[in-house]
Image (cartoon, rainbow, N blue to C red; front, side):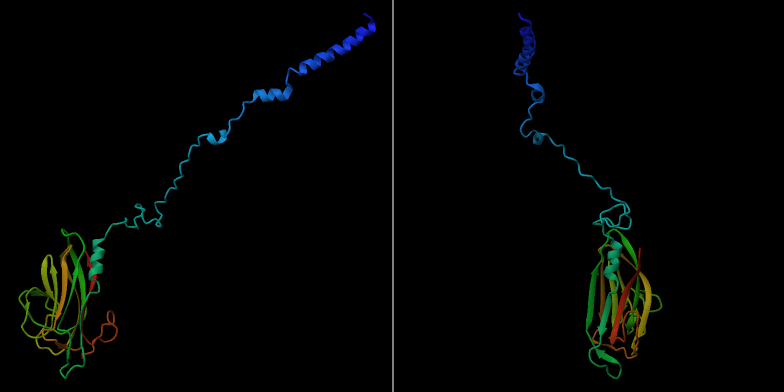
Length: 250
């Protein structure tokens, strides 16, 4: 072989070999395609998501804004009743009222209602006896009572009213049963008196309080003495009345 042809062959032969190898090997891009697995359709959505539990906010035991917070002593548990408070609400400010209708005669007598009655049933435990301190204030005519016991003044326990026509003011409690009169005094006094005293009474839960004022004939003494009790009655009341206020309950 001639030397020139041999040199040409050495140049051409490597070039042919390079072309042949590129047709059988995919190069860098092909390597990457073969090395990576095809991604499944919707694979990112098919992954199971683990739900997160909601974060629980710890409550401050001193948070009085939460009405159901049992750890706050200033807030009563929902649904709990206070029988003592219910008794107080039922009895406080109860009144016997006997207003005059029309003008009084020369003796100070006026026409009015024949009688008035008001009844309250207490809440509380029937097995519990409550001691209730009551304050009685008002303007009344006086009446004698026989039997029973009294405090030497207006308060009469038990007994019975005299047969005259002066007003009877009575408080009856059903359990334990007892009757109290509130205007004990001398008979045939053509005047009214101001009363203001405190007394203890006993009552069980579910007991009934009955307040009654009976003029016996629809006639009563007017407040011709113009007695006033500003703490509970504005001005001068034209007639007679008694008001109860609760001082204490045990």
